[in-house]
Amino acid sequence: MAKFESSIKQVPYAQEAVYRNISDLRNLERVRDRVPEDKLESFSFDEDTVSVSVPPVGKITLRIIDREEPKCVKFESVESPISFNLWIQVLPVTQESSKMKVTVKADIPLMLRGMVSGPLQDGVEKIADALAMVPYV
Figure 1 (tube, one colour):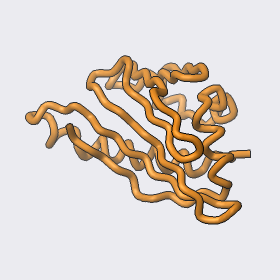
Figure 2 (figure 1 turned 90 degrees about the vertical axis):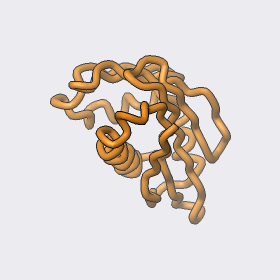
Figure 3 (figure 1 turned 45 degrees about the vertical axis):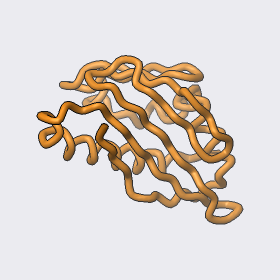
Figure 4 (figure 1 turned 180 degrees about the horizontal axis):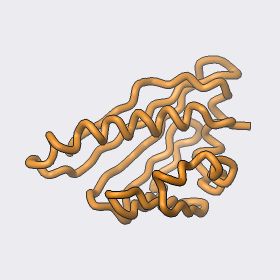
């Protein structure tokens, strides 16, 4: 298993507000308009799953497998070219702010690690950046 971690992102919202939003994927409706059309062919979700088609990777579906209120939401890949887990950790900084980190553990064959490690690390960082900019109100 290869592990990829984002840098720690500062979020100007309380830990509980961030957790409440990321633990129910129906809240993605509020950010649907921010999904780049040229990057994603489809984007669907319900309370526990989210699916996207990412050219040229294909369809990726994640399902929430664990919620540790108010600090962590864990996902596993249901449909993906590679098997992986993703978790989002949220910790309080003050009453009105928190910090966040995204981690991915992926089952990447040794021969492919050199080729995909850079893009995966970049992807994890972009996910964390996007999550840090969401209005958690």
